[in-house]
Length: 176
Ligand SMILES: Cc1cc2nc3c(=O)[nH]c(=O)nc-3n(C[C@H](O)[C@H](O)[C@H](O)COP(=O)(O)O)c2cc1C
Image (cartoon, rainbow, N blue to C red; front, side):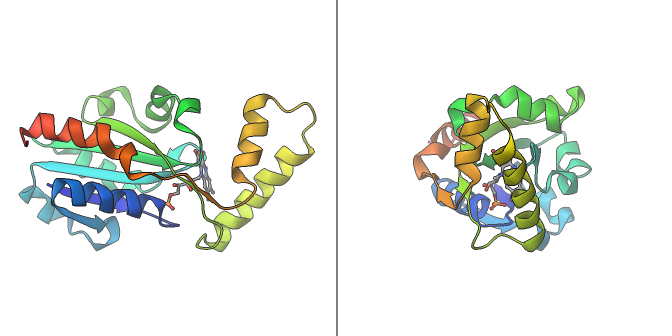
C-alpha cells in the first residue's frame, strides 16, 4: 500500500501523511514516484487539492494509476469548502468520465487556504477571484460563504476527517 499526493501549499501532504501513519505505509509526492514501481502495490491512494473544482495532479495519474485494473485505487481531494457544502458527485463529474468512475473510490477532506506557502500564480488567481466576488452585489449565501472562506489563510484540517477512508481501506484490504 502507498499514499501519493500532489500538494501546492501543504494541506494534501498533511492529509497524505496522516493516512500513511494510520495505514502504516509511506506517503510520497507524485513527483518523486517512478510509475513502474507502483506495480509492486495492491492498493494505491492518491490525493490532490481542488483548484477551481479540478483535482490537482490528477492528470499525471490518469493514464497510469487509474488504468491499473487489478489494484484498489482510492482518490481523495482536499479543499477550502466545508464538507457539508460539497457534493462529492460534483467533484466526480468535474474530474472523471463515467468509465473512470468505475475504477476508484473518492473521498473529500476540508482543509483551508494557506497564502503563506502559496505560489505566485495561485495567489494571482485568488486575488482576481476575490475581487470578482467582492464587487458582486446580492451575493448568494454560498458566494458570501466562499468569499469569507478565501479572504485570508485558514486551516480547518483535522486528522479525524480521514477516518472514513481508513475504514474503507481496512475493509477492502482485510486489515484489522
Ligand atoms: C487557485 C486555487 C483554486 C482553488 N479552488 C478551490 C475550489 O474550487 N474548491 C475548494 O474547495 N477549494 C479550492 N481551493 C483551496 C484548495 O483546494 C485547498 O487549499 C487545498 O487543500 C490545497 O491543497 P494543497 O495545499 O495540498 O495543494 C483553491 C485554492 C487555490 C490556490
